[in-house]
Length: 343
Image 1 (cartoon, one colour):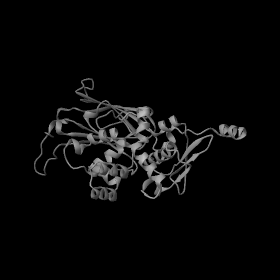
Image 2: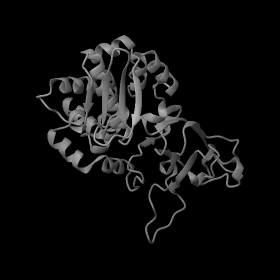
Image 3: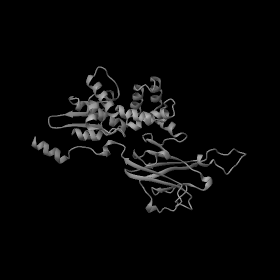
Image 4: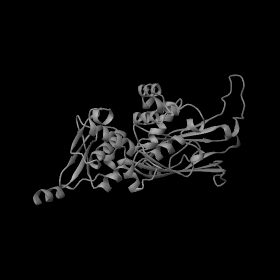
């Protein structure tokens, strides 16, 4: 209830993962990232200042959940707390404060309106089929939580069975990402995967450095038309191939660019007709640095680029993989010195 009240007071928007860093700012907490050996994080309460330290060595989704757990200790009025994996990721019915902090953290990161919105957007729900591991991964990514936390939330909603949760957890998030991409394999286990089509044109995607942004579009090369990548400045399948080295965008790379015919010809039957608009163009963009990047593509004939048959536009807002690069709220050493002298 306290987590829900906090969302109500701050009028949290439910169109993106909950901004836990903004909540830390609003609460006036000091936040620091440190490599911790045995703890996921800890909360300190004093008369002068309250603060949180999060382990910089763990994945971002676990950092977010740990931070929500430490925010709970602050909002619920608990004394200082040092939290290990048992406190943050498991359930101990004998530790009342930790149970309360877990309930708060879960509701803070996975409020009901955001959960319901993410469930409605799942391919399985739209196609009226059983939720698969890949759908559960998309759900957890949409909420900005770990694959495991997303599975248990779907279990709580009655969408996954207990056996589903056990099976999907045993296979792991990487297997779910690989299912999502089909024959391709995710090269970076911590990278998120984004699958986007023509219906996503005009979308702004908040992703991280190293994420794989896969664009899949219809393409009819039998008419000579193909997708031309105008932005970023990267040589693609149908040009331009003469991009000067100095003009290349070093902050985003095109790791895959392929035209996929709708039905490959058999060994003894060949045809120039590849199936028209059912052919596919598959591109995978990977941002290598933070920033704002526009992916802009035109469906046109390379020799007639001004005659545009269709367009695809995407805005990538790329942030760091960990909270440490997204702005911490720790006093400067001079501030600490001033406080110590004053004290």
